[in-house]
Length: 340
Ligand SMILES: Cc1ncc(C[n+]2csc(CCOP(=O)(O)OP(=O)(O)O)c2C)c(N)n1
Ligand SMILES: [Mg+2]
Image 1 (cartoon, rainbow, N blue to C red):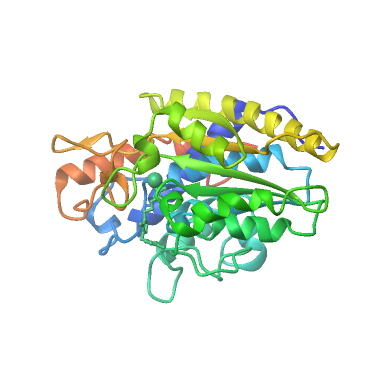
Image 2 (tube, rainbow, N blue to C red):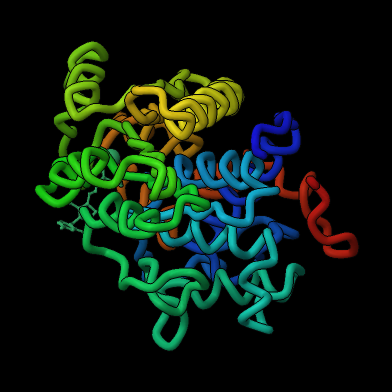
């Protein structure tokens, strides 16, 4: 049984925590709790990773984890493995990382450990990889997530799997051809596959095709593959409102998906659900840099403030960006995490 009520305030705090830890992993090598003003020395010498996809992953992960918390047969497949800092942040705050890595304690030392080790020789890779709990594939190659989800559901009617697919990933032959799998692996002998398209409008350095389609065109494409599209709107100009609205939409979308899956299981002839999660790329990140739009643009794909180690203005922007997550409201040295 799924579908318990959502505590929106709790989820928003968790998302703030994972967004903060995402940015901290990307940028910081010290002063992880911002106990003193941020200094050039606190910034890593080589900034290597991807931010833009991460806030959407943190949003989806938090909502899915909450919705399916009592379902031990639920799994999550992450398409954009380049958003590893987000996956790692969630595994860390949920205590899943600590179960397999004794250094990843949910305290100040653990925070320092995941941040220092991210994208560092001998530490964690910049992309999801087999050292990540629950990850069996080397991340980085886009396209296989949906096929993997269907493979996981094959012959296991008790399983439900949600698959997050990037809108750039959705342009790969692999992802697009996997859209046909619902015609082969539907029915009561197999589990439920819930695709979630992360419509953030951009891939590396260009807009995505899905992002340039009208809502109607995209819905018709999804319907043409035999799915029922359900929209989750997280694209408000105010990032806080965007997250609030998206959480509420997510709850409704998951309820609707659950209902459709139940009806299909009872033999009704319905199309399976397909969630379209619309967010700005780089949601909650810097709005612009030197007059160039960053949030809601491809400029947020990798490191939005590439000169934070040497440029006073970018350092200050990084500091206020980190502070915007009010991490002290969700974590204290002496108390640990307390959003839950
Ligand atoms: C098969 C494949 N082709 C190209 C790439 C290079 N690549 C890395 S990230 C990226 C863009 C991904 O865009 P999207 O799926 O929209 O993810 P987002 O970061 O926007 O969430 C690409 C093309 C790749 N990783 N795999
Ligand atoms: Mg994208």
